[in-house]
Image 1 (cartoon, rainbow, N blue to C red):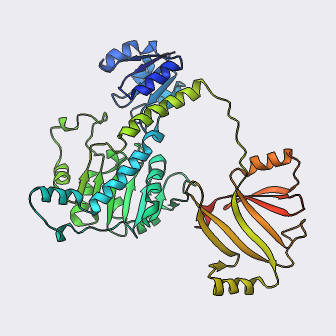
Image 2: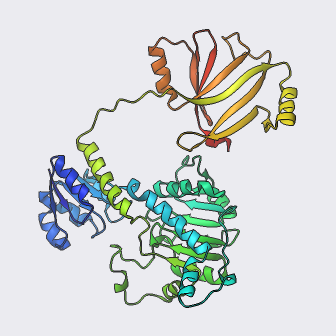
Image 3: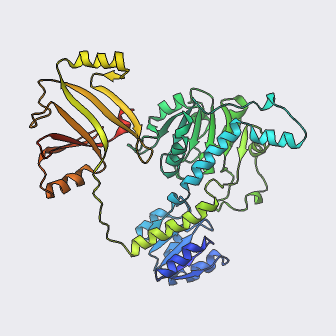
Length: 446
């Protein structure tokens, strides 16, 4: 299979493809018309952002099987037409998500602490401590719009800052232990710092405009490391001038060309841009949030991994993981209410009608919980065990584990049940003790 690489990438990508048996050619200089004249000779393309792969290009690529985009999005490819031709589109958001998360966090910390302003003043012989008094991130509410690879990377970075992290996404159920998914209205009511992580599409185009901005209850800071087209720059400047937006960290700009290159070839940049480059409230970078030494390698590796998986799939034997921790301690009590109150008063348990929840972090530093619950002595929940107690153990894949335990001759009690806070199954141990197995969704308790 012949692959044409249209942009320079880390050499590991080409090396790996050649080692897999592909014939890889580079063409970093020919015009799009020249590429179109020979594209029918190739079954694969590797591209970053050199030019747009439109319908005309794809019609001439008569033998094309896949396009690998060494980047997070596919906005420079006509996805609809490519899909209609059965061309597989491969992107690599996993490759630079960490870089984007770190960059977004670094920008807001730099702006909060006036590092750019202070550095420039000291170089000019000015020592202005009060003028450069900063503010802290702790206690703020961070709102994330677009909770995919990039949004999740930022939320993960924020775990140690004692902040509340909220997200809004058009997909349901994307929240996790690092971030609570909320409605757009709730996000706009609570947010102190807004970070944009949306793809480039019709929904995100000029999403941050005057109407959107003024729906926020409080003045806020804006971070955009996604696409410049998401922000109406003139409306942003109006909000910065009025104080509705307190500051902005912009790695991307509305005025960028689709190729993201040669930005300053635009000879008629508007007044709004001149405001941005002169304002102490604004921190700018040249679309490099995902552009680190490490991401250069990771992006190449990710594309190579996905092509290898596509053409050389490996048989995956799913590992059956057993218990990962104690999920609960349940026991019978003569008076559960009085007992809960005793533990609350004398031992400081934070009790509710079900007992008490203890929070901790697992080996992956994810938030996890263990439940302590006294049951009424007449409960039948522990049956068929005749014991006065039952343990709940946390597992990662309950369905797979139950299947494995059944193969091993273990007694399964009842059928697996699923709730908003996880999946549950029950077994009997060697002495007839009933054991509850739980595949948790800890975020449901937050």
